[in-house]
Length: 323
Image 1 (cartoon, rainbow, N blue to C red):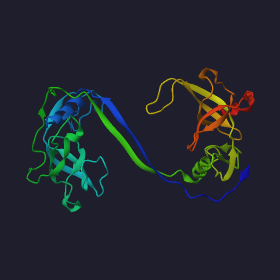
Image 2: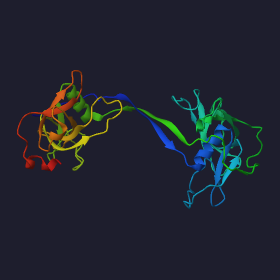
Image 3: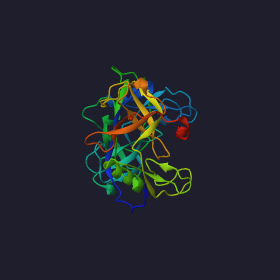
């Protein structure tokens, strides 16, 4: 069935992607973060003699391994800044603040952090600042609560970095950094039509006027021909398994027992296969060419899984171009 309908109102939805990022630390990063816990800022001397803060394990210019640790001052100079009028959750300060690059006395590179200042008029390049330490420190960059103005801090560059062994009791050897991304997703007109059709338990693709391929989900344009796809085409609901894999690792927060099968399914009338889980059949009986149909959950907006229709398997020549 082919029809042309007016563009729908584009959908928008807030989305959050978050996960804990766990990493182990090498000797330089371990010393740096353990030092912060002990109110000590360490840098590393590069092959050319420059002191890098934050320190790195390898020279950014020569790639040589770096291990010569030095201690720099908790005071420094703002080299550049930007005002943040609306802090987001998880940022260093709740009230408006400045993001600053601070070159600590004794260092040759700058450290990015927050500066607690009453307003943008109180911030300038070249101003003297010092570290405000967090009351509770665990061996993380957040042990520096922020920077604060320190106009009595003297002239920059008056302190030479001091050699440091990097040895502390109970060193930090790993960190868990929560990663979170908040954003508003707008799928565009083509996928808005697709999502609205799914809410009616229909699958809607779009046909390329040049190559005639029907894209599901639609993308609004043909990635091969580069032309707009405005011709809506309802496909499926039945389809053919073109390829598949057996999943043996259970995903966290996913209530599906392993092993199960995840497959590429070419819906009837579509020019591209989509992904779907196969159910209603032992995992070791799923095969290429298997004919399947969607199974919708009671309140679902998309098929929960696909199950065999009982039809004879599709001939390979009918789907070989969709592999």
